[in-house]
Image (cartoon, rainbow, N blue to C red; front, top):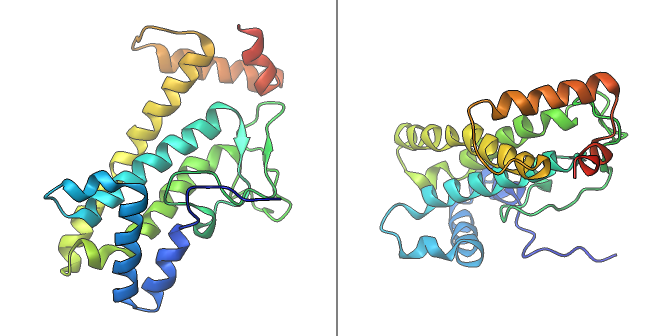
Length: 208
């Protein structure tokens, strides 16, 4: 079994150096991450670590939306299993949902349902807050200023995730145009699927 990704740099990697207060290594890691995964940041005149946070937020919002769009449940969404590149890694007790139920859990260690299907966006938001906390000093040495910038960045996650999620579902359903009723239509479909215990994958296949 080979684990393949563009790198294995995780949010947990940043937390490790942050917890040790090893700021020199933390900066070196952040610089390497930018160069490897988000090199377009290097040409910007803005704070590159603040931009790194923004890029990681967007990449994770897109990733979780893709999971949700295909009924995928990661199973162990801790910070050490969250790659800053926005790729899926370390998904041991994972599965694709059968009968639609947002509370579905497939990890045998997740007794409380922390990582259930419907919780994945919330858990990713929490993971991102931990990433932001880890690089706060790099964003600004004044923690109050850093926290203000971090809050402004984290605010983009909910809408960004919703945008990717809705776009993906509209493609599955076959909606080419956008209307204000789109979200209501999608939620109604999921309501029917939940009530009828419809299979997530087969439901969308039958819509083709």
